[in-house]
Image (tube, rainbow, N blue to C red; front, side, top):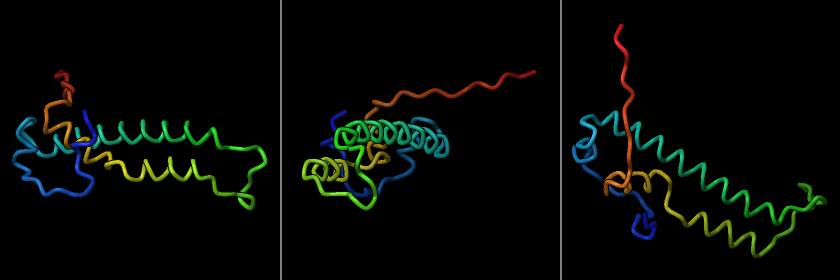
Amino acid sequence: MDRKKVPTNTVTRDIKYLAEPTGNIYKTTVVLYKRANQIAAAEKKELTKKLEDFKNERDSMEEMFENREQIEISKYYERQPKPGLVAIEEFMEGDLDYRTAKHEEE
């Protein structure tokens, strides 16, 4: 999925089109919620890994100094589209695969 196509601000959408693939808006909401959490966790892991390079043993809360590269990395991630918007775009384009659990009848 190309994130350049994802809007960075809120877009009004008709819920009947969002509910079409699952047949239920609540199921769609759960699918989007779970995918957005996956995206957010992956982004957080990636950002943490990049920022670890700047971590210093001597750094404490009182001794924090500004590092231009660190600030640029943080700004880059702030400009990225929100995970919820990415999940919706993936869902609308059909790039998101999901399945529902079957309940066993006794």
